Length: 123
Image (tube, rainbow, N blue to C red; front, side, top):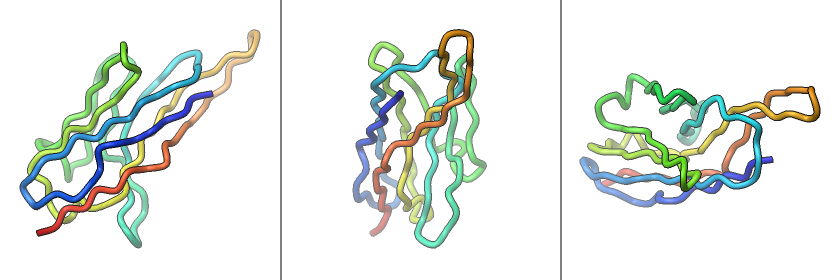
């Protein structure tokens, strides 16, 4: 099982930058993808960015060119660099890991979530 702990959230002015970190611990057979989702008050949770096991990335249209997802495999950590922040980016940001576990010859999918870190963009 994997535990995820997010950090780096806080209050920032529009146009500012922030870097979120997600530290993973525990065990998993393989990771298919790691990503960041966010949920603003009264809105549905949405995918922000994802990095796949092969290194390819995907971003929500609203953050393309401003956010960058990366990972440090040695530290078991995934990052989200957020630049040119807008008030619309205000949300709780959640780290997510999707992978596969194995018990004997039985493989099954797993989906883990962190508890979230709050990002507030306001002047």
